[in-house]
Image 1 (cartoon, one colour):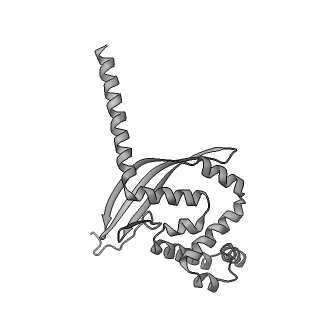
Image 2: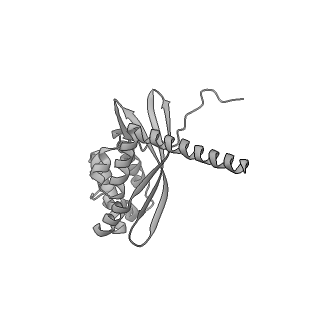
Image 3: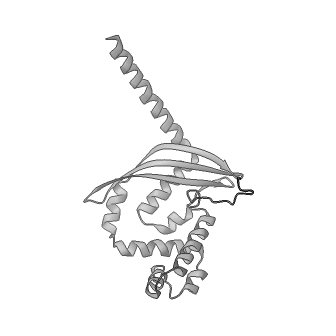
Length: 194
């Protein structure tokens, strides 16, 4: 009997510690940016989602896409990629502002899936985001915050659950989503080992 009481007490204390941890995570200023970004992205409001993203990430996304266009194996593939961002040629893509590129890119992807507003409304109405963990790091003098969340939503037909890692960088006193923090970093070794 004493063992059962001990196990129950242990389980209750672990639950209390987890609840305290999630409350502490939810107080971090980066969590509100994460919630806003996820809600806007899930609702396909790309203008608002772009406001949550650091400018350098948007520039890098555009640069990688331009490289992808230039690496197209066929002219038809190149045209399809250019048209996905509602441009006539690669020069027009290169002239786009990074925010405008981000919006056009996601709207182009969105058009391929043809999700109507009624479904988006169901997704947003059912969207739940559970904070799982938060890790802070400083790299190269920049403060980063990585937030692991479990998202759940329904499109009216299916229940979808996903594990998402959102990385943020602190710019001045504001947390912004960074699309760069999860990219592999490769640096040349100064003097290779012998």
